[in-house]
Structures are given as structure tokens and as C-alpha cells.
Length: 301
Image (cartoon, rainbow, N blue to C red):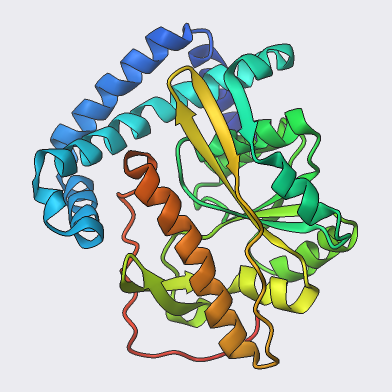
């Protein structure tokens, strides 16, 4: 029997490999053109991004600088596929030419505690290239992810994400696999900047507005004592840079719900700080403040 899902996934990978043959400067120009077209014709996401920037920066969103942020966000989205395809074909010996890491001493200091590490990250720059940094630095990284609803696309994306040695942990029943990885002194990266349903999150400030935020990282940090280290993948003029920041001190008072809220608030502050520093590199098209704080129900994952 013909496996259509497998065939479709293989065709998608062939397409991505073909895109990778396009020289990087040409691919980036094409991507920026695609981004400009998305900005012009994707009214829904343009309005979401504009509204989000306005929520975060106030009147700046209506100014030329605010509109420039939104335009650049779409340019970034347009170039992502070309960047992924190009990186997929890149010789590992060329990684240091395009990829840099700053602040690795913060990661080393956290790992020296012998409890593994939780890597706090966000949809900054081209976050899909994060696993290259893990590969070139020898960091045994696992990444928590939500499977894509289209099985063929999910299979192709998983293969791309795993080609540099990273392990993927689906969000469903992730607790046990994360705990196992930490026990082996591995590290687990979690994207913590997207809206979640009220029963999966806690409401803490993000740009001075209550945002429902995944409670999983704080829960794992409190339960395991694993240090939380922020790591963000940023675009640079000539390549990409992973910025590792100091460990976020853990609050542990014995009140689980309160500790989850307080630690999650600290994680949001770290993400907010990097977004303020590089506002044109964040994923503003997502409805970050969608879930309203009308109800909460404390529960463990």
C-alpha cells in the first residue's frame, strides 16, 4: 500500500534541498520580496502584528518606526524557509563562519551544578536554526515542540530539526521525558513566548499586560531544581548569533502555585527584555494576549 504521507514528506524535503542550492544572498533577497508581498496582502496577520506592537510600545506602533518593525517581521518570515534550506546543506566545517555564540560561560556555569539545564527561548530571529548552535558546541539538546497538525509537514519538519542531533519531545506527556533528560544532565529547550489556554498556563505580565503563559518550565524547575538559562537565536548582518544570558534565579517557597507564577513572571521578563532590544526580530504575528484571565484552575502537568 502506498504511504502518501511518507511520499509527501519526502517531496517536501527534496523541495527544501533544492531551495538550499540557491546562493544565500539571492535567497535572502527573494525571501525579503516574499515578505513584502505578505505584508501587502496578508491583512489579517499585518493587523495582528500592528496591534501587538501597539500594545507593547504604545503610540510608537503608529509611527514610522513602529510600521518598520512590522515590515521587518514580515521580511524575516519571508526569508526563514530559505535560511533553513541553506543551513540544511551547509558543510558543518563552515558553521563558525556564519554562526556565533556569546555568553556560553553562563551555560557552563549552570551545567556545572549537575542537574542539567532548562533553556528558555522564544521565537526570535530564526529560531529553527537553534539546533545548529547546539550541534557545533556539543550541547546535548532536546527541544519541546507541539506536533504540526499536517502529518506530512510534521514529518518533514521533524527530520530537519533532528538532522543536527537534537531530540524532540512532544508536548503531550513531556514531563517524564524532560525529567529523564535532566537526570542524565542533558538540557531541554522550551519556547515560552506563545499564548496557551488558561488550563495550561498562568497569567503573568508581558509588556505590562497579563498574558497566559505556559507553566511547564517553572513547574519543571521547581520540581527538579534544574537551572533555567535564557538562550535566544538572533540574526546578525553576516549570519546568526546565539545569545546566552545568566541563569534566572529560582524562587522556591514551598507554595507550588505561587512559585510557578513568580518564576514564570521572571521568564516573561527575560523574553520581554530581549524583544525590547531586538523588536524587529520577534514573532509579532502571533496573538500573544488572546486568552483572557476570566478563569484559572491550578493543576499539575
